[in-house]
Length: 424
Image (tube, rainbow, N blue to C red):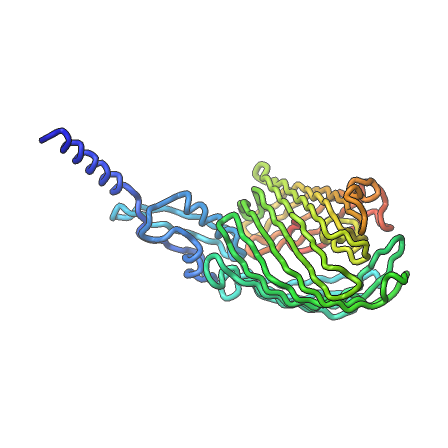
């Protein structure tokens, strides 16, 4: 036999041998999913029967499934079958995803206030979040929310929201403060698109009306006693998510950019642009520790108006500062905390935490240099506790006490902040 023929046969045999050695998946088995649709899970993952076994792809599928509200933990196992192929078993621990939303508090006018809501974050087992709330704080409010990330395909979804919100809010102009009844009635529709495992975008439109009615406090000829504004908001949200979850622990980096352009047909307010980016960084420390950080950078059209969009508030940015104590057209906020698990069993975990919240604002109509002016800087620190159900989605009850580090602000040196879910 000629040498060239030997070479041809050698490479042919080598190629067939390499091809034959490729591990093929004969079956993908889903275990532990009772409420969640198996068809949905199979449509979301790239691991399928008949393809070549790829441990990297399986790991990405596990990360994707862990991010769904339906699951608190996901794992996998690869088993060789008698035909020299492989069975992939994907196991999930399901969350209970029907969550009541109950809050009770008193307003500055000592009105007994409450919020009652119910949400299912895995409605019909299809990874759909659906629910609503009713709130009474001296006024009646309600909202209905629907979000289906996989309504049309693995990548395309839809969110629809309606809200009729009423609250008494302070407006600030100069050194004066007035209280107004604020009413926002909105209708929103968003398209949801997942580019890949790390990147996704939401975009759409929100039609809303804003009504302001003077209640009490100082007045000014430049600030009307009542306003009725119809507006259109164009919304764009871009998310980069490289977070990894293990029950109550989080590790990795996430970024979320919000851009909104608001048009209005009135003489009192101009069209304006608002944008902010939240940067999140989490690092697991040892077996029980978690270091968590959120940096928010935001700017809006710099109108000299009491209706500035960025608010200084207990529940949004600085724990202990008070409720809606100031507003601005620019914001820099850094929240940092160390969470330590002191109790951890199969269904329940308890964490303690120590935190610092730092922030500064640009005054309406002011300069960017406002952000570095000492009188605009707020610094709070404190301690907190988290009670976490490991079997119920987002069932983290938190209590924090924050106190001012730099000065007494707005008549308060600090206070308690309650909530459901981690602060960030």
